[in-house]
Image 1 (cartoon, each protein chain N blue to C red):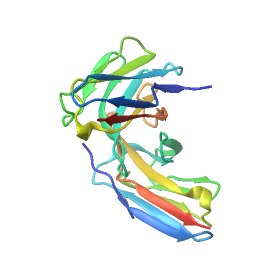
Image 2: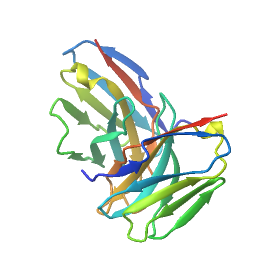
Image 3: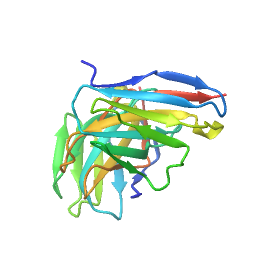
Image 4: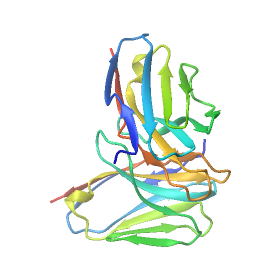
Length: 111
Length: 114
């Protein structure tokens, strides 16, 4: 099992604030995915990053894959209450087929 | 438009009584996964199928078994559920395992063990 650590584990912020979530590992991944999960539902894919150093933007969300493909970050600008949820990163091992989830970041955005 | 379907959404079983959870997909993906997710934790990979090839995670208890009779269906069998097996069970699929393949998740089955 390849360990992916996310930080922070819990985050509670006011609407309009910015935040960054980190996903770190000592292992190299061929790709990394970010998901958002709401209570009682399955994770929903937000983005996949594949190339070291890659940056992808999804409206107010910016995702970056580390140059060495061992870490990633998710930055949210001007957070809104609708952003509340559990954010999960998942790394795809280099031999393919297997994905390992990070420890998760529970985000609460207070109106 | 449902792509990964899990039935039932909620399952209640008794301690020690075998239970089967089912997953079906309309994506024709050749890889299917089962994850266990306990409250406030990240999903934990139990095993996955690449076509008919079964791949078990080293720390998955023997109490958990899986079957994949065809491309579309995959089952999770819990032979003797314990109280610690109460969790959300998530099924996911992905295409042929090339780098960057995306996982698609079902809505999950929440298992309660009495």
